[in-house]
Image (cartoon, rainbow, N blue to C red; front, top):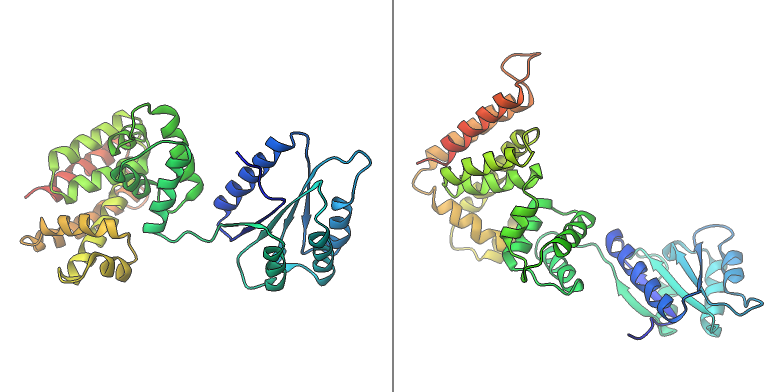
Length: 331
């Protein structure tokens, strides 16, 4: 594997990707220069130019150094002059790691860095939906593992738009699951004790009108140790899913999945699932409307209780939840 270029530009504000790019670049440099030192300079500070020149100056023993520069978009003119000097000379012992947050500042410096032959790594903000799914899939590939599209979608649906948590979840799955590819069943099994995930599974069964599986998921979540959070989280998950179903149903079948996804701000792959769920209720919309009222009542019970100042215990909440999922998903 070849070493990184002497100059690496990391541009963008998605911190999880920035951290990943910095770690990978430093690791690559250390493979070529195991004893390399590392110095950090904030380009936006008053002493940045002086600190940068000192960091890049030749040492008595000629040791390699990684100079990581943050805040390139806010660099003062004095720092810009110092950077241009180093770019022109490109000392053999210096590895430049330059971070820019992707905003409009520092355009001339960016052009100069690119002109000096820098390798550029984009870490722009990851949009919800398709782009995040692509990032998760790429993360599995980074571990040299495969995951089915259903597994990736379930993981995203369960954890949401939290890249550090998603990366951590992928790392846990590839470490603990030997089967290849990793499937949605592995995701469900591995995160069975997580209240958010359990809530999503329960909601999926409810709006697919599968009362037996919904009830089974509730009891499995309790047996897995989620009894303290599964009530509230499941009601919230059911309510969120129902709102999406109604929104998709209101658009009608003529629009394409991509148009619906763009209109509602949801992933395109989710549109087909929501349409399928809507079709199961299209002839029973009064029952669907009644479910909204039941969910509102259940949420109040979970968060409060029967009377002001009183709250339900765990067993009472689970009873309310079991009654709710059977009632909502039944025909």
